[in-house]
Image 1 (cartoon, helix red, strand yellow):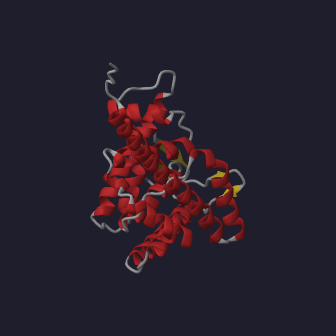
Image 2 (cartoon, helix red, strand yellow):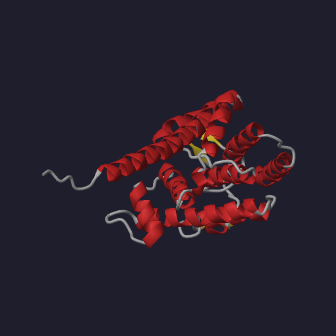
Length: 273
């Protein structure tokens, strides 16, 4: 955590957030990587064009465009709730889930009843991912009640950035491991991680799409060993990567501006007689 704290100080000292449109493109990047992990084929540039100008990418599925747009609207909603210090409730969690699945969710009919993923309903069937079998659907409501109680208690008890980061990573892992929804669990869990980070005025974490295999492995290994430090270590490495990339962008931009300024000073007409 020591290195992360130093990086955060360096990051904050650069006033990155004051850059023109920095926040918007930071949000676009979060959405792009999160949606890509769930199967979206849009590139980062195509994501920006879609969210800026509603320009669709030629040859890409409509579902992927809708996934990105839903995710972006949901991110803005989550950050607004975090900004106003709104504590999480079952209804708010289900609202977040409904927004992320607003146009790609659907109604499901099971022997236990009907539920709608576009409305944020909890699943009424059992699910698995790879070799992981998630908790029986009948246990979801009580597990979510306990999850939210623990989270809201922690939000009032965090006093430093290290605790806040660890809390955000634990929230991410704990919710995706309950898997309360039939779809959208990964996106909702990453959004709640960002909710906690924004609650404490921390830069927002990104799980990079190119690290998808390592991400899934960290989740599986943590569940199998019951050692949360595995997932925490993975997320800390992703967070460090994000901070270093942002710092590098700003420093490179400053260097380019200095070169351009120097070049302008040296330009002009030299007259030889």
